Image 1: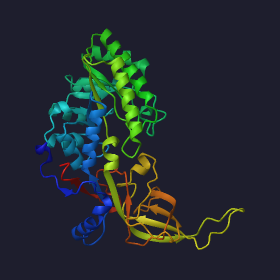
Image 2: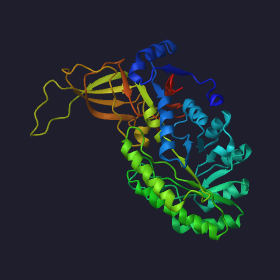
Image 3: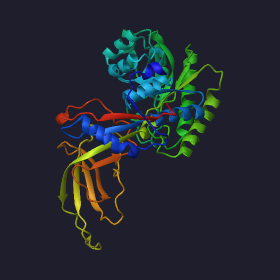
Image 4: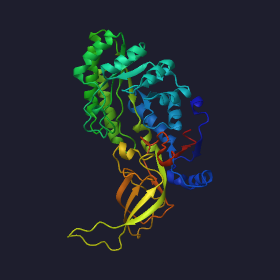
Length: 415
């Protein structure tokens, strides 16, 4: 654990801390670091990540977690999960290099990009990362020509219509094509080590896991008929994250355990993996932004049966981060994040229609519309909770924006 956490700057705080508890000292720290302007920043609760890991191992004892860096590639999360023994799924050379740089062995890395560039295949080969996913004949041929000793994982399409993010629209082989792909792999003398699937983010119907695990079992039987001895099953992600009900998490885990016991009982020789991103990080990250501009706009005209609101106004606020930066999840996950004021306002303050925009002039840089809030001022700080998934991205050069700083925190007891 220690070797993965070298040089990680973590604030040691009291157990049960909240972002609001740390906000005053963090704002002072930000002001001292950047004297000419305010910048957005994250508070990352690494203790939350650790608790999620422990909870997962208890609920799904047969599952080995692999963390997808595309969800949140922040240094603290990667190093913490590496220290806890998790594996990693990588979709680019940059992600793979990050994981390798902290000493994660190649057997704990999967190259999961379904559309791999030739340079990524060659880099994986140079680093000894043998596990790779595929879902079509062309992708299989690319790997066969440049990395014949790779161990391939066939990715299946799933019935993910009830998930918030439908991955099977773009990725995954249907059951009708699986036998053909396995036959082609056999002709190319490529090892197919296992099967993977992903039911989509925040899956609302845990029974989709049962059907997907059953489909994986069927395809493994196809492989056995062709002489393959598959020993890996990657059940992807889709587990409820912390802000969702604990009961739903436990129900989903129970469904998965039952399906595994039925189709892949202990002792069958199949290792179970899961790629969990949002589950680990979504509730662990809180984004803090600053209002940089404000404009009063005309109120929408009331309908014929509505009264003119007395003293109500409408404001558009621009903040110092947006959809091209830390709030990219607004587009990726189709969410409307609700800002929280650092201090609870007096109950008698009038509420106004409040909309929020990012710092760019782009019309797509819209964060939220029509929220009922007290009148705010330029320079006020706002808090967005549950901002860990698809928010910590590579730096953007769009109109000179810069990535938000990350301040890691953890209680001494948990550390």
